[in-house]
Length: 298
Ligand SMILES: Cc1cc2nc3c(=O)[nH]c(=O)nc-3n(C[C@H](O)[C@H](O)[C@H](O)COP(=O)(O)OP(=O)(O)OC[C@H]3O[C@@H](n4cnc5c(N)ncnc54)[C@H](O)[C@@H]3O)c2cc1C
Image (cartoon, helix red, strand yellow):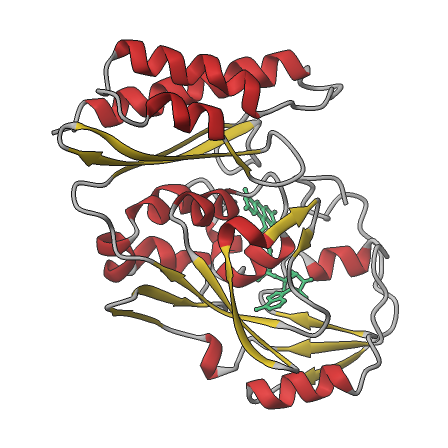
C-alpha cells in the first residue's frame, strides 16, 4: 500500500480466511506457530481489514489479539509509562497518565485520523504497521521509547530507534507480538512539541515533526527531532539535533537547525508534492516547533 493510503480506496471483498480469537499471549503465539507463517495478527483491524478487501494480503488465518489482557492497560513505574499495545488511540487522548507523562503523544494523537478510527485503531497496530506517514512512530523515536515484544523465543526489548527498518517494515520477527511500549520518565526541564502540515485535519500529513529538548545549565543539553512523511521511515534529524546541542535556544541556533534539515532528509519526488517543497516545509515546521518551545524555555 502507498504510504498514507487508508486502504479504503476502491474496496472489494476479502479473500476467504479463518478467524480465531486468542484468549492470551501463549495461545496467540501457539496459533501463529501452527499456521506455518500463514497467519496475521488482528488488533483494531483498521489497516488489516482494508488491505484484505483490496487483496493486498491473503492470510489463511486472522488471530485476533484485541482481547488479550496482557496487551492492555497503562501503568507508571520507575522505568516510565508503559502503554499496552492494544490501547486505542482515543485512550491516549483521554488518559491522565498519558497527559502527565507523555504529553507529546497526546499532541500527536489529535492529528491521527478521526474519532471513529481512534476508538478502535490501536497504538501497537499503528506502530507495527510502520506507515511512514504516521505520527506515533515519530513520537516514540523522539521520546526514545522501548518496544516490548513477546515471541516464540521469549520476550525482548527493541529501542524505537531500531524498530522502523523500512517502508511498512519493522524489526519484529515473524510471529512476534508487540506487547507494550515503555516511555522513559521525562528528563528534568524537558520540553516537547509536535506539529504537522496536512491538507485537512485528520488527513495523513504532508510533513510532520516531533521535538524533544532537554536543558542543561541554561543551554540545550540534548535534542530529539524526528520527522514523519518525509521518507520510508520516521526520520531522525541528526544534523539538526547536532546544530542545537550545547547552544542557547536563540534565533541563530534555530536558523542553524532549520538549515541542517537539508542534510537529514531527502524526500522523494511526488506528483502531488515536489521533493523541494516537502523539504522546505520540514524546515518551516521545525522552526515553528523550536520557537514554540523557546517561549517556555527556562
Ligand atoms: C480512514 C483512516 C484514516 C487514518 N488516518 C491515520 C492518520 O492520520 N495517522 C495515522 O498514523 N494512522 C492513520 N490511520 C491508521 C490507524 O491509525 C492505525 O494505525 C491502523 O488502523 C493500525 O492499527 P490497528 O489497531 O487498526 O491495526 P490492525 O489493522 O489490526 O493491524 C495492522 C498491522 O499490525 C499488525 N499488528 C497489530 N497489532 C500488533 C501487535 N500488537 N503485535 C504484532 N503485530 C500487530 C497486524 O498483523 C497488521 O499487520 C488511519 C486509518 C484509517 C482507516
